[in-house]
Amino acid sequence: MTSATKGQAAYLARHPNRTAPAVDLLRLPLLGRLLHWRGVRLALQAPLFLLATVLVWHGLFGPELAPKNLATLLTWVHYRGLLVLVLLLAGNFFCLACPLLLPRELARLVFRPAWNWPRLLRNKYTAIALFVSILFAYELLGLWAAPRWTAWLIVGYFGAALVVDALFKHASFCKWVCPIGQFNFLSSAISPLEVSVRDTKVCAGCRTKDCIRGSAAPAILPVTSPDDTSRWLPLPLVTKRGCELALFLPMKVGNMDCTFCLDCVHACPEDNVSLATRLPGAELWADASRSGVGRLHQRKDLAALAIVFTFGALLNAFAMVSPVYVVQEWLSRSLHTTERAPVLAILFAFGLVIEPAVLLGWASWWTRRAGGSREKLLAVCTRYAFSLVPLGFSIWLAHYLFHFLTGVLTVVPVTQNALSDLGWPGLGEANWELGGIQAGTVRVLEAGVLGLGLAGSWIVGLRLARKDYPDRPWRTALPWLLLHALLWACASWILAQPMDMRATFLGG
Image (cartoon, rainbow, N blue to C red; front, side, top):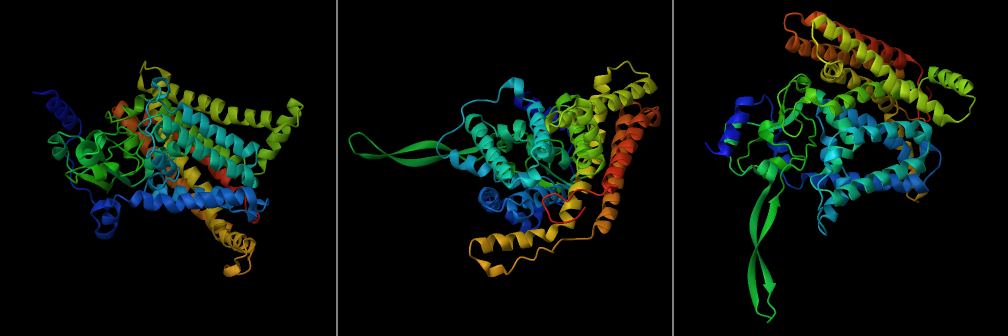
């Protein structure tokens, strides 16, 4: 048996033949044709790139008052609300349409990256640090009220993506650096859609592995010889790019590291790729080795990402309610300082380091004791940390939807005002009284979202316990179920408080 055949047998043994999915978006009549179109990504990126350009321009040269500026309003209210909504309903389509990659694609027409991403940095810790830095800067600099800072943040984001991917191969920015991308990857675990193969038997017979390698075709190009005699020279030309994030589809499980770029769809010569429905959250308890990720429950960096993702949701929401000001005043008096940076640093250290360490350490110790195991606490914590993801996402979803739905129409007067400033009053006079859905109605929706998140975390926790301790799953899962309930109660209390309506004229 050849090595290629052995490899095929190995992944077929790990991933038995799949049945046809209930719904495959790539098989739908109109949507399927659109997604198969090789220009679909550019068609989505171009208008978003134009919008980002408008946000930078208005942030730098528009009104300094945040509720009248498109940069602050669209970035901190509408973009975040639409992001979590799309992640919930459809998955990582925002990465598919990401405008950050448009300058990279244009740059690649001139030069190609030459280096591989450093092995020491092939983890999520850089992205986690950047994610925390953005949350910290959001509070310290008051980014929701600072159009110019917001504009420079957008410019910096584009610049970082361009520099990283200009120097390093294989979409290194998306996989190892981008904090928004990591947020999307983890949130997509709750999505009902997944890029996968339709039939692993078709992949077993594939010799080219185009879905990950891409495909090349000879192109006959005219070349002029030194003696001015025209001749034709065949050159290899890559026509279809494979997965730059190193996800080999037959061994891919879930949405981690998948940007929904659809390169594998265009590259597969057998049309064996699907964008199909699946059970949301199932990848969080699946422990099979997966391409590009390995064993999820052994990835300490991904567990750390799940922890920061969840506790960061609580911290970000808590920073917008009135009790936080009481805490900040007490810390300022205790430290004898009026500077915000050290006060915020203590809040962040407590919310993202001390609190998670105590709570997760306690839950891991209880699980190990109840299961009669001698496994290291860190290993237990790493595995069960992924049960936090459904609840964590529900907190982000409830929080961001509150701002988005209560202020959904605020973009209308801001756009009217921006066009009037340019001398184009075609949309009429700005109506600053426009808002959105009543806050009381949205809070009912918030409660339902948090309840579903709690149920999802309980399901994942129990599934993990049934796998680890089949003879005593409830006893070993109990500390995690209690932890989920505690975090749910904290989130429910926070989101029930009057909340700052940042970047809008709306009241709390």
